[in-house]
Image (cartoon, rainbow, N blue to C red):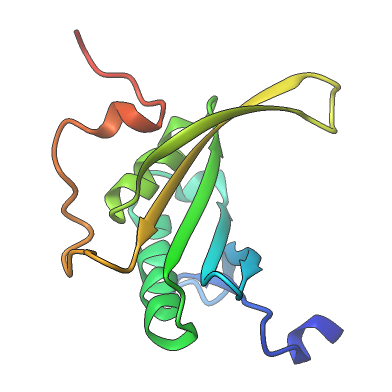
Length: 144
């Protein structure tokens, strides 16, 4: 609870108005104020997947961080085994930046992460309308 008093702590519940209770969360997991960079992490209950809810939450946080916090760059990561999370990032205007393989603490195996980012400079005001054909960039599969 102490973190909520800190001015650089950003964490929100994702809630449906009609339900009136949290179904997920979204937060800034790393903030590098000296370079204006924020990394966002999010999760949502499985029953709420593929309904556009996470995209709406991510878009709102992106807008907030650019407009209110003064972020210049926003990034996020997703596990290669979860391409839908990558689609959320693309839908919000992020683009593929790279891929890393890191050891996972739980289970002792390697985890492949896809990185995506969005810079304030040159950002389209209609970030939800990403260029078609780029969905494969974040680990989603494209028909041949």
